[in-house]
Length: 338
Length: 261
Image 1 (cartoon, rainbow over the protein chains, first blue to last red):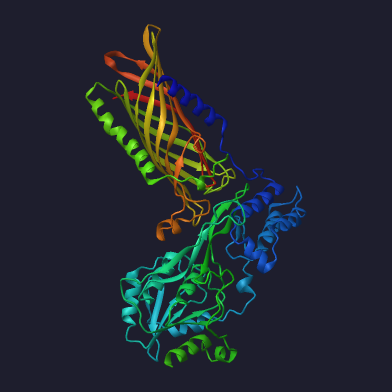
Image 2: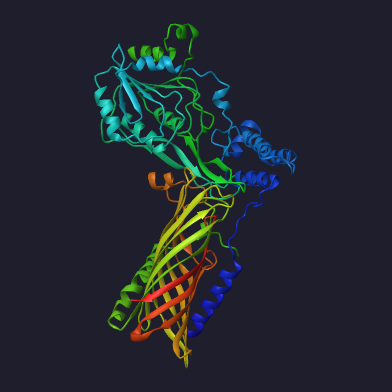
């Protein structure tokens, strides 16, 4: 017994003192060190390399070589930030950001280069002044007895009580419009909560998986994502979900779930995508690095990183804008009337 | 042959046996509590260095405060401790907080008694619950820590007289040996774990190769009249893990001050 414990103490001490667990990324707070750390961090943790290579031809090693040449030891922070942002923009992912105190590096080309299909003053005119507010849902009844729910964000909590109350109040309506335009996302839990009030049975809506190691293909198995019916009020009539290119992240996931439901029509423009759940890390100078870490795909195991196509493609018409009419809302009303 | 953590499989029976043994230790030692005991309270503060690659690739450094209550019987020792650390990243623009509670119960066998020098050693059941919170991160804001370990524990004491006063020098060392610990997978989100209930090797078998750690403490005991004692010492924790490709270390060096209760 005595010898056993002596042995354990000696072995343990040797292991503890020799096997130090240290940082693995470059630690030098220099232009080269920061660029290398940013590149390596994404190389080990970003989850869409193979998909981006197939879709965009992104060769991450080639990207590293190309941007290393743009680094000089005497460059300023602003210059370094510019180079780093250009490097991460190659991934064309709205979830990949570089955060400094003076700027946020991003690639928002997925909506900035596309028609917005949304005019805030016109959309607000449909809500009028007497609309209801339940958490982040704004709602009213339109003239033709169609319920209209504006959901601008999934950032703030939406409870089942909120959704049940709204749907109960709108229950006499002939149909429901959920206007999701410009919803840049938020919490997946809130998106799940809202969607769960539109199904009567548990249905498969997609799959989710994450990285298990530093290799580009080190992934866990795909776990099915189910949408389960909420216990409160559940909507049984037709629904039109209006989308545009700014429906991103959790809003994209909400559209993915709603797309699986029989009474739901997607109308408007393709969503903005953003199907990777982002994590945050940092580089030596303290700039935050946000990147997609967890992959969600649709029920056919297809990527929705670049968005979901609508069932009915509708764009805002200038003649409607001049008449202060929202083409997408008007078309949704027609669909529900039929 | 290198063993990949993901390839290790343990039967439910084996897992249940180890957990049962770990839980049994405090129950078996209950019998010791009829004996005479010494209870000591320590408070201290010092310096901490924490790395957790689920939150950041870089080590955060800062101050730590800790408190320990220790009850010592002839062969049994119960120790409850808690600590809070306020940390900062190398760039100095983000804060992180590390806090945790631990409970350990050890049974020491007398290994050596040579005059005033005594050495005792034995197994220690050790439970730890804690959290590291990074105030900037979004979907990975915190790292939960949960571990149930069987440690190797040793205690050496040396009595001496100086300036016509009695002193005791005490050194204790605990080395985590085997057990189970919680860890998220390399890129797994808490949404997957707790909202969807997706398990992915989150209960990790801990052993000296993936948990090369130790806790040690050196205390000098100043004895006063009527059995009163004051303790002054140095406490050092070197806790390291490599689970699911995630690296963690928590190093702390503290000066501690204690009294006999």
